[in-house]
Length: 356
Image 1: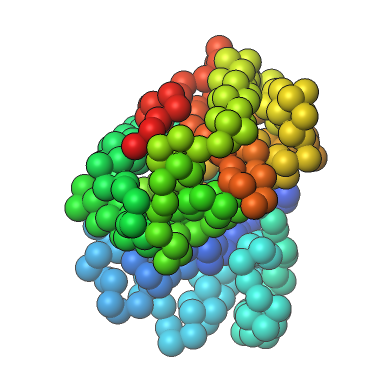
Image 2: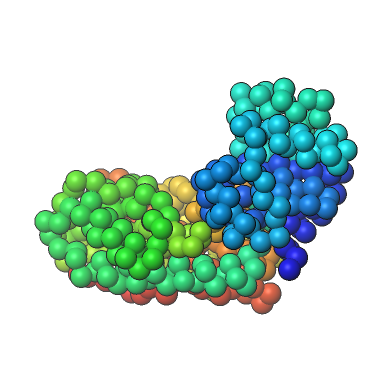
């Protein structure tokens, strides 16, 4: 069966007049080949696809990397790369400039000479922006697990429990349900700390009459989910309920109106304009959303600086927020797929103002 991802990469290489590409990024290696081992390189030429790895994976790699020629590379992998390229009379090879340090580049260049190394940026990542049906099915399961985790943790929130204890309970739950790990360091930010957009879980104890923001996701079968909900313990001050309602209005408005063909800038404005109109524009300092997939932050970007065009098959987050230092903050986030006619929402946890 033809590997459609490799076909798209070959087309992108042909557009750049390149006959070969060396992929060193672990994420891109898995995306192209399906190989989940911790060490290896993908080499794509005009007619062949190679997975170069060491003796530890010579049983696993052929089972996972269907359609690839699996090669046990020499002690210096560039010797094997050069041998393959010489055999096909290829005199230059593209490489992922964003994933290779300058020192590594110098060692590769010396070993491959006289083959030229051509820097390429984002070539696989551009392909990864568009999820196929198989990827979307996995991402839906990752989103379902995030929803289940949120429902689970609601039963553990009480005054006196620490943010780290809540974080740990969420991690255990996701792992027990099949996740490899959380998608990123889980944010559990309560009270004044909820005004910190990236307030990862601390030793702070939850108190009565405050907000708690949970921002987390599950890494499941190679794909991430990313969910944020803000809940209350008791009766926080009225201004916190006010900003909750504003953020919810902005988030729901964005979900209703975001569509293919929009720029990231236009999508961002859907949420930002509402928050600004209510007088809290200065308290919404981050972007409205970002791409999601094998990594928790991918292209495209939903920000006031983004000219990315939203297209069917892209998965993005929608996560406006308001943050009031010394008081608290609110963020609400869902994962969505851009479709031909609009969107499909992957996450479904309740967004009603919830008091626990």
